[in-house]
Length: 137
Image (cartoon, rainbow, N blue to C red):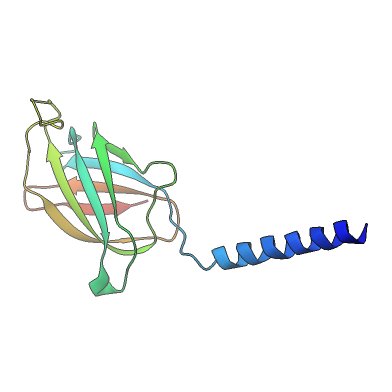
């Protein structure tokens, strides 16, 4: 019985060390939102690349999300860490043509500095003619 108890305590100690070791890793949070033109209409399709802004002290992996009908959501198990990001947005008409799965581009890639919280969040991207702006909930 002492062997069983010893093995159980050893297993518990290993699990505790794993949990403590994993807690040092930065957490990634789900992100969702909308992409709209300045007049309020949804951008039909496109991509957004969220890249940590190293010039403002953020590092780590970036992510790319697709949007359809003006809405996006990170996939399960994918997210962003809080902090400063550069968001690169490209919008398309949403009508696939041959290899163009999103259709024709509606505007040039727009890059904007954005700050994301250390929590699950929603972001609204407004794409005016002079570049996008961001609003957070």
